[in-house]
Amino acid sequence: MRITVSGFPGSGTTSLSRYLAERHNFTMISAGEVFRQCAKEQNLDLAAFGRLAEQDPAIDKMIDVRQKEIAEHKDNIIVEGRLSGWMVEKADLKIWLFASIHCRVDRIVYRDQIADDETAKKITLERERCEAVRYSAYYSIDINDLSIYHLILNSEHWGIEDLGAIVDTAIGQLTPHDKV
Image (cartoon, rainbow, N blue to C red; front, side, top):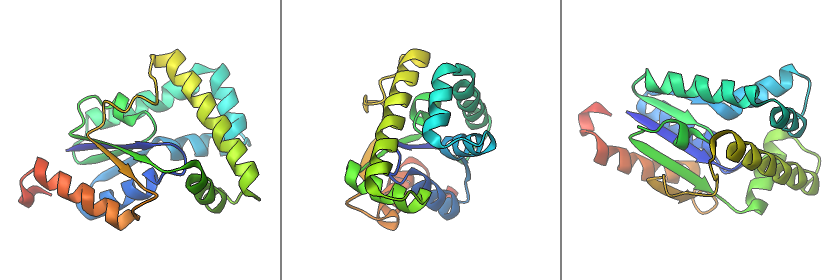
């Protein structure tokens, strides 16, 4: 089984993916974690690394191709990333998480240890703008087109265990219960 989990920064995609991977004993790969690690290796913050990626398509394409190849050759995998729903075309279940910018900024301030909400909001909105431009230019993808997703869930309304219970139910409908 192949499951993708996508959403904007701070929407809870990594947390839900980790929950699902642990609960179902699936492998998890995360584009965001790879991107953050690459930024760190270059001694750049996410916004600066995003601008670099905007100038050098090879950065995004390397991450996206790697994720796609792994997902296509492995069963029982959770693929987390903004484009995973688009890249893993034959996923059994494609999930999009959303939350308000206010909620996401609160999470990002805590997760990335950013000094204040206004700075986090500025960085987050710039990152989203930069990514939308790159996705459109590189792949002709409109990141706001959610028509490819099977489940669209509000992570501001439900916690990770609640979201996990909803997804667990969906997974149970896709496969025999004894295989999960």
